[in-house]
Image 1 (cartoon, helix red, strand yellow):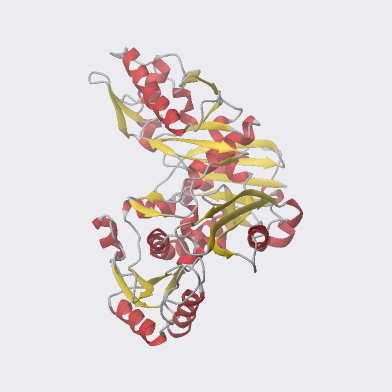
Image 2: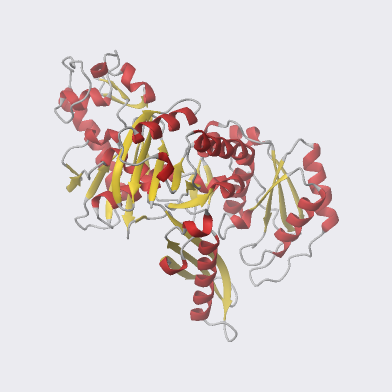
Amino acid sequence: MIRIGVDVGGTNTDAVILNGTSFVAGAKSPTTPDILSGVSKAIRAAFEGAPVGFDQVDAIMVGTTHFVNAIVQRKSLATTGLVRLCLPSGTSVLPYADWPDALKNAMGGHYELVPGGYEMNGDEIAGFDADATRTAVKRLIDKGCTEIALSAVFSTMRADHEEAAAELIASEFPHIGLTKSQDIGRIGLLERENAGLMNAAIRPLAREVVPAFVQMRTDLGLDCPMYFTRNDGTIIAAEEVERLPVLTFACGPTNSMRGAAFLSGLDNALVVDIGGTTSDVGEIRDGFPRLAGVTVTVADVQTNFPMPDVVSFGLGGGTRIQPESLGIGPDSVGHRLLQEGIVFGGNTLTASDVAVAAGRAKMGSHPVPEIPNLDEIIAGMDRIIADGVARSRTNAEETPVLAVGGGSVLMSGSVDGLKVIRPPHHDLANAVGAAIAQVSGEVSKVVQTGDALSREEALEQITQEAKDVAIARGADPDSLTVLSISDVPLAYLPGNNLSISVTVVGDLNLGETS
């Protein structure tokens, strides 16, 4: 199977061609303001001189920062309303609590509380009230909302009320976009609600971006399925991204970690991905990123959808350096490194110039002038990286550190006492990670065990549900394996309650998806 893998970074867009597990070719191109032209240039550059043609490609996998950037920059966000099904309870902490004012205002900050939701054991807090839900939606529309997010108390336990509200809105307000929180988050009302709100706010953007990528594929002469990479290192179909774009937020560092594992042949390691602007440090276990805990902060908002546990900091190849004050970033020249870096003929001292002056890298065609306090600056850069690695370590074992990304030349041969390995094609690891991505299925539920349902039966049931999800997304049933499974007793509640999460992965079955 011949695949194209693409990863859009803040500085460069990378593209690779893989034939099965063999690396065929790859290329970098500066990321452009419109994103798509940079992607097209990178793909065309990768095919220059490659022993394969566009007509031989079986699939293209893309990792893009479009959607998370919209949230972080508060741009291209829809006016979004929330309907929380919770009354007469669920009013102690209102929606948008602790959100940054700028992000809340960019989305409108509108919400309505209506009767509904469930107790932990599945009993109704109150019955679903169609009239109240209809009135709430009308109020939100009158306030200018074009997207609605639904969140019912314990909808991960029982989703009837969210489904009923969704059916009502789809039937009576078909022009309104809709996001159900149960499709995104796990147990935890506020965090799941926040994830749903973010998803709703960027759905209109997704409906513009995804067709644009599909059109770009056509313009390149590619006749193959297109997928986008997810937060967990797997892929999602283009049409599903239009519905759930939030699932792509952390695809950048995830792609890098997956690619590092593939290129190095190591399934367990620490990964340092240094780009042009920032660095990400994470851990891979069994070839996949270690996921964060229950809550994940995105743009200063707590959410609970699956995301890799990543430490990020402002150090990259384009980081600006102030030698007199020993200042190291965090601001960067970004995608203008090739114009502004001293070794490339510019006038701005960057971390890449420092790496060249210290003998760690060879790049550019211009000499680097003598840099005051060079040793102290190099030591400062090493400390920043070492701190990130130390924060990502979960044990005292001699874990190898995989250095990837175009800026990985900034690193020394060891960090925090651990050996640094640069695998082949390390500068294209993120695009490789996209190209090798598999299909996943994840199901998270709270179940009550007892005489009618044992723990083992509950685990088996939810594992099968996760497999069914993966198969529906195009996974080969014969290739499915369980990536992670957890069951946590909720001892503070009556009954034998378990919070169960299962993730399975499998190879893409193009016969089912093309």
